[in-house]
Length: 270
Image (tube, rainbow, N blue to C red):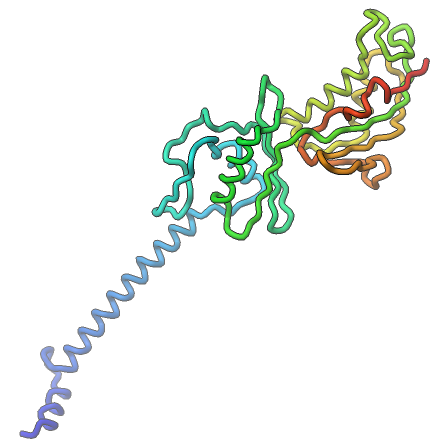
């Protein structure tokens, strides 16, 4: 029998041992293996996808407080495809206050640490460590700017009507002759921005007015000027702005060192 005739018989043979059946079994087996491998790959991709954190503004603030460890090195985890610390050490988590603002692909994280219960900027080395943390921990393509600096300075000028039996026209408390109660109230108002509840809160003119009016002996107040300047920046006229509000670049406020309250506030009998 010729070779082509033998092949023809084998190709038309319906037995399991026939060549075309053997080829079919082998191809089916290979397809099953490929499908199985593809399923495993898809499960791996899905598991990885579920483990990837999709950052949001609150998450950046949260991670600055709850994940960053000053002095420790981030380690890349091949299992999760993410950076983390080999050992979690809460004592090295030095950031206590954090807020985040997102501007397109730019993320601004404002942070402070608490010293004696008051928010204080990080030291130079501490901020450098936090910068390094975010250079690895953040999603590729996102630029993170860490801000930890002195508070925005407030140049506030006001005319205050007082009960001169309680507060003199020099702004001094009559009872003890030394305390300047309105100055104290305004300073405490600024200091509240260095607390967990008010860090990075929006400043409104009416809020400082209320703080002044709450002082015993004050009858009325007129804010004549309110200019606020971030560190290294220019003054912003809050009263002239359409909204009469201001978000501190540093997340907190303090008295303008060049324009102190002691000379900026004018008193008259009410």
